[in-house]
Length: 446
Image (cartoon, rainbow, N blue to C red; front, side, top):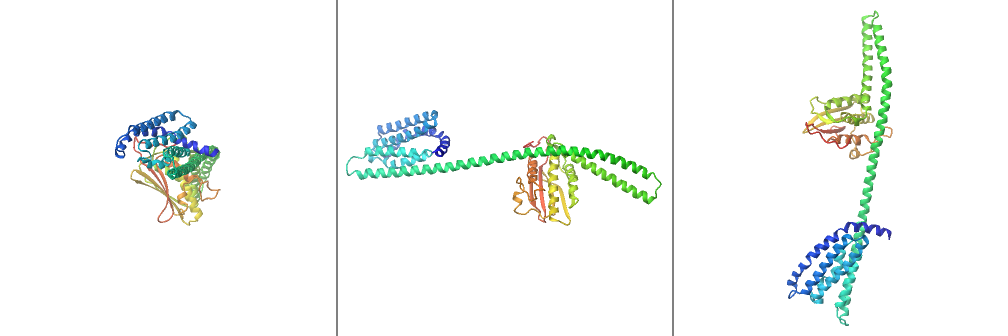
């Protein structure tokens, strides 16, 4: 019983706004139906018109009462209306000839029509069926000869009432199942939104923690690096000031030059990491050249790529500018380049190669990150951007890199698409709209 009440009340809430309007429409149409008597009766009858007019008044009263009634009162109003409706229709039958009326043939359909009109309330068909049976029995003349006729009417009305109740019950079951499915879908969507929000919060906290740790580590690296640079300069000055052979002097100069280059490389890496350690949300979107962004990401990725293959950057300097947050795009490119190096390493490609190409396609700038590895398996490609989906081991990836990368690109009106190259290998395509002065794209998130 508790379940039935839980199912029916929402249905009535959904349908309860319509009986008032329907009643007013039927009330306006009923008196006009008197014109049908011109074609079905020898002459117009005033009592038939009065029956329709009384029915219209009842419908107007229903509409007025229904608007201010409680839920329980509305159910009783519907049941009473269904019983009165059958009474008024049978009054019309009586005034237009009784059992000889042309409208009497529609009497068996009244319970079905009522169930169709108010499917949320199974009692409507029962109330209409009982009303029709009582009034019809009053019109059937008494006598043994009319017993079969009365039994026939009762059986027809009973059958119509049964099917009306059955149909309304089926409707309520289907509506209840639909409501449950809708609620379950809404619940799942809510849980997914909460999970995504929690994921973003956790990711932000992790990035902030990593940024603080990186800043501390870089500070610790910079101090000894300054000592090493000063000491190397001192040693170089003192050693080269000694009388040395030309061959040894040239060899020492090359050693010191390589040492300085190595220290500059370390300094550049520290500088790049320092930029990534800052909160990227603090940097506003701006108009920038893609060449600079690609070079920053390639410089960081080259540390990982040099052990598995070569990195080639083919991004023309004359590419049109785009409106983005440079470090966000650099983060995306770095993630794609690291993924490519992981794929080459796992596949043990003998001469691995990763290529970054830039081109213009219509009103969009395209960056292509390609490799000559095995490419994406067909069963993996459709799920590549799903959160937490990864083909790497738990120690190498969480399955969030590509989904976050696509979200970052989409925030500036772009798209990130994965595909396999016809000649073999994987390709990730970043498309961004060309910047038009005065038409900065609206970001979808911070």
